[in-house]
Structures are given as C-alpha cells and as structure tokens.
Image (cartoon, rainbow, N blue to C red; front, top):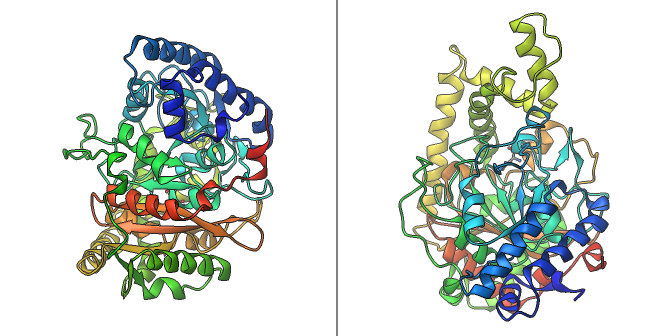
Length: 492
Ligand code: GLN
C-alpha cells in the first residue's frame, strides 16, 4: 500500500482495527518517506526507527489480542521540547544537544499508554523562542508548500512533518502562537488549548504562565483524536486543572454553526502589515461560515496595541528565570577548558545559547532587575489583566472571536527580519496566551504564491470542543484542509 499517508486518523484507526494493514507496515511506510523526503524538508532532529518498529510490533500484538485503544499503532512525531526517556531531547538548543531525559513528559507517556508509535523528535525554534524554525544549531526546516519558505515556528518541525506527510499528526506547544502560526503557514489545523488543559510536565519551559501543548494535524477531526490523548489533569503539573475532559471526537458535531455568534474585532482587520490576500481569504471563510448560519458581530478589542509589548516583556522575564538552570554545571552544554567559575558560566551560556535566546534572557533579566521591576514587569502584569478582561467582556456577546492567525503567509528563509518586525508578526496570537484562552487555526485557502492562509477562532475558557466542532463543520463544507503540497504527493 503506497498511499497509507493519505488516510485520516479515523481511517488509519479503522484500517488497523480491521487488519487492512499492520502498525508495522504503517510505521515502515512513514520511515521510508522520512528517509526519502526529509532530506529536503529537514524536519526531524532525531528519527527513532528502531524504537518505533518495536512499538509497532507491540501495537500489532495488542490489536490482535483485542486490547487496543482507538489510536494503538498510529505513528506520531513529537516536538523536541517534550522529554522522551532514553531519547535525546534538545529543545532545539546546543545547550541540550546531548541531553537524554530520564523520564517521559506526561504528553509522551499518555501517547505511549494509548499505543502511539513515536517516529522521532522534530525541529523547532531554540527553546520555542521564534516564529520561523530557522534553528541556529540544527538548521532551517523547510515549508513543504515551498521549500524556500519557513514552516513558521516555533512548532515548525511539527507543522512540516504533517504537511509533507512524514507523520499523520504531531504534538506542538504554543506560548505565543507556536501551534497556530505554523499550522497557518503550512495549511494545517492546530489547537492551542486553554491554559491548564494539557500537562506541562516534562515540556521544557519557556514562559511557564503561557506554555501549553496541543495537537497539530490536517483536520479538526484528526486534532480531536490527539486531543483525547493529550488533555487531562496531571498531579505533576501544579497548573494543570482538575476538570473533566471532554470526548473531543464524539463532540465534533455538537456545536451548530447555525446561530453561532462570531465576533469580528474591528481593531484586528485594520492592523498595519495585514497582507491583502490573507485578509481576503479570512473574510471569504467568514462569509462561508455566515452562509452556514453564523452571525458576524463587530466587536471591540481595545487593548490590541498592547499585545506585543506586554507579551515581549512577560515571556522574556519568565524565560530568563527558567533558563537560569542551564549554567554549564549541572547538565547541558559546558564550554571547554574554563579558567574559573565565571568563565565557565559565561562561555557555556554564550556558546550554548543562540542569539535570539540570549536577547530574550537579557531583556527578561533587565525587566526583572530591582530598579525596573515595577516599571516593567508589574506594569505588564496589570496590562495582561486588562487584556484578559477585554476578552471576557467580548464573550458576553459572542461565542467565538475570529482573526487571522498571522498577518502574512510564510516568510522566505533568510528574510532576516529585525526582532521587532518578527515580534509584530505575532500580533494575532499573543493575547490568547496572555489571557490563557483556547484558539484554533484552520486552513482557508492560499495567497497569490500558493502559500496557505489560516483563520483563527478564539474561544472562551474550556471551549476546545466547540472550536473543534465549528472547524469540523467548516471542513465538512469545504476542502482546504484536504489540499496537499506537491512534496506530500511524492511516493517513497
Ligand atoms: N513567536 C513567539 C515567540 O517567539 C511565540 C513562540 C511560542 O509560542 N513558543 O515568543
């Protein structure tokens, strides 16, 4: 069977259950594709072929013995920010180039318990700081739609593997847009859950008050299957919430688009730098939802101008604190021949971290320093609360809020945007993390260069089922999510 990679998660699950193919065959199929096609896409940092085949054999035995779960035997790729026992976890950094975790992240452990087969670990922006997956240590992952463009970031490897059919789905993390923006750039569906829905245990920390893992796949239905595995309370993560988990797959038809009130923030569609094609595709998708029975309601989100400065204070502040542990002493990269302790710290950290990570540590340390703490960090926290209140007020009148996921389509590799230009590209995604809300990206067409455009729907707290359901119905009525990049059509 040469076209196993074209099947949806549901079709793969059914095919395995009906013994149309084995997990071993499916896993070998993906490993073959990776060997052939990933030389061009460069998405995997580590391919775990041997372990994957062993897991596939175990999955086949479980299926035969009748104790398989829905996803037993399905292959997955993990962002290299999730700790995997016995397998290198780099977080995209030279600092952790040789780090082998003694334990699995909860997300990885849950995947194993569900019978998922780990194909490997995929590339990302270093420590999830960035929007392009142009990694200074592991190279640039390519956008499957056009290899001269970035796949987005920081979960760019996760997006690229799915878009090139080098894994049927993948885990990602989103601190300020890192699931939604690469999903948008690569024509995929990606869900950033409510803060606290998915365990952060074993997920290497960037900005802990905003970090959240979530699924990336072709469709809302595919994401729902993975969300069923990822979501849930975890005693090992103190911010994980004790709240019953929905069955996201059974709920896919539960929200009706008919009568759904979609908020359109005035401020969002007048943003400078919003690409005309992106705007047009997003508006067309909203028109489609309107035809399907939704009501579009113009709303105000008055804090829009504060998103970028607020996030780019709080995230670096938390990063500077989280990254202190990489000191060249306990674990991680250590420079050669240090002359004294100061030299050891300094050189280990300047050699082990790339430029962007160092920039954020400097900004964050400055913002947290004694004389500036109130003026920057405390102020940013107050603004953060206002941003959250802005959303809560909006949700009194609407069910979901629509926006582009990004103001542009995928950048060219090496475009070398200045840090501020790069940060402004996150305008539509950051507020969701500052407020802890869930949001989803759905592909809604292409720009003039045939690069994908994404629609973002933001929901109120714990509305993951609703978001997946709305996108699922949109995807029943349209076919953007079924479009494949030319490289995905290549056979191995
Ligand atoms: N691009 C944003 C940043 O650089 C978001 C990254 C993320 O969500 N991990 O911080």
